[in-house]
Length: 295
Image (cartoon, rainbow, N blue to C red; front, side, top):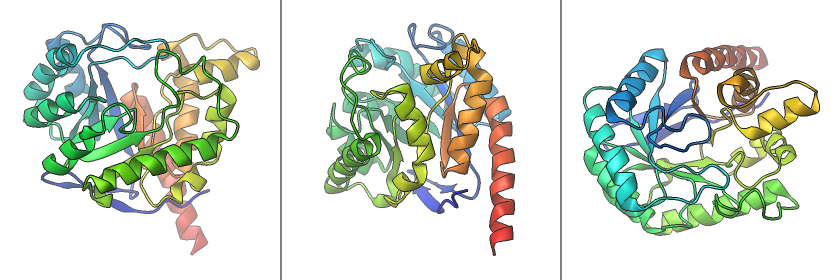
């Protein structure tokens, strides 16, 4: 079992302790077409109520997104993204006490979200789509999540997969970190995400979870998002177990969340907050007991 390092993640007006316990990031998709829950929270009232419910259920961060990045998705304009997320973030400011993250790859959206109250920008393209996001993060003192994606959402599951997935992920994230640091983003503002499900085969997703300790050698905290993803269904199908899709993959998700934490993840990004918060607390207890035993 991997013993993860501890970090202080700098936000505009506070810091998050990473590594003492696993932080749970609740997914809030303000979209009509996200792969698992598209349309459920498209209206601002529903989105705000869901965020409040996730905080009560144990979320440490709420990640608000206005553009689906599911395999095959085409993307939307910045204007559409802004119309979806800014009213939600603005209403959540002061209503919840936990940090708000904005899931976007557009600097214009990141800037407006920060103005509305977001403290973290979660870029699934790791600055490939719009490197100016790093400048927004520096100027606004936002935490910056850099996620590895091979290709683009529209084609990422049709393009050839990397021969060596860990090398591909590590190389891509190393380049993203260099861009962010050159833009003036402090090391204490950066989190890395291997991008489970983004341009990887289902076997490669499993390999990345098994090899997270190797990725942790980068010296940055890790965020892992496996929640309800199709590779879970693929694994279960091979075992002749039907997992369906979305919420039906909750037990498979729980297993991948546990694996992520015990292999060193600092933050897990999930849809089912109440259930995965329980998984996180048990894994933290096991990891803590292992550290005491190893002294």
